[in-house]
Image (tube, rainbow, N blue to C red; front, side, top):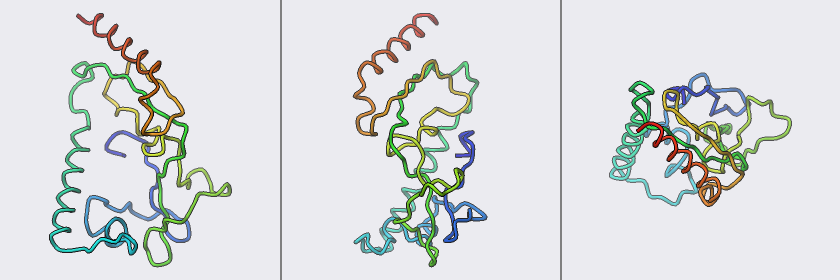
Length: 176
């Protein structure tokens, strides 16, 4: 998130609810093993083999390369205008708390007593957090529309899609 110019928010807490001293590197297979997530979760049903681990690390490497490729490297004037349709209507998992064994506690829910900086859920579409659906600094956004839809149906908001397309067409016509 820091690479994209986003405000950093703690994503993993220890069993007592304190932020970890350093964020786990989720691009490394060892982190997944240590936290007991993905195929390393005891209830995953996956038989972990060396071949699967090699494959999975290659996927993590490609994901990191992809994310780094999203970071703007050119002046803003070289990017086409962008229109964004996103949702803030569904709680979206953002952070995790570890259990006493240092594994991710998937059962932990945010409570009303949790301080704002320790929320495990933030507004979004249930899959993508609202604040992470905004292009990074350096990419020109000509219009944003927010709806309350769930991830799989955000784009079914046809009036909003039409409005954003119209904005982009006008922007394109103005720059010819």
